[in-house]
Amino acid sequence: MNLLVGCDVKCLKSGGYLSLAPIKQNIMPETLISSPVSLTAGALEQLLRIRSDQGVPDHYGLRVGVKGGGCSGFSYLLGFDEPKDQDTVYEFEGVKILMDKAHALYLLGMEVDWLEGLNNRGFVFNNPNAKETCGCGTSFSA
Image (cartoon, rainbow, N blue to C red):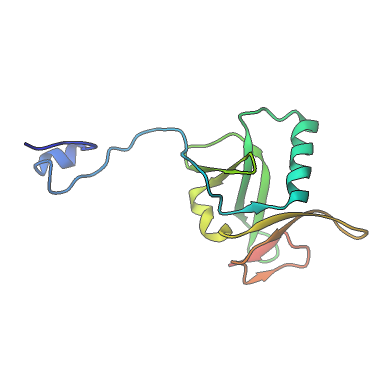
């Protein structure tokens, strides 16, 4: 008896048990408990304030990612957004964090902090994967 769980046409043609190929399904992003990035208490407080002040809908999450460009090669992305099919969704201190699966390699272990000083005010990215960062701290090379 052959059990054909998650079997597609290629699998069926091969007899159903030698080379199982999973069926691609269009499902919502998976929610995982452990986030590859962390937020400091200061960053969390500012993000919750921004969410409230801007009236961000509840189903939006905090998108953390990278994009090409900036002084050092990559720039950080940080903002509220809706989940996309290519995202993995994490929970951190009650905040839903959205991350494109391809960005995890660059962001694993990163901490997002909030700095408020005389010369600087804003989010700071402490990324252990960065080989170089620019002077303003918003771009890096990996």
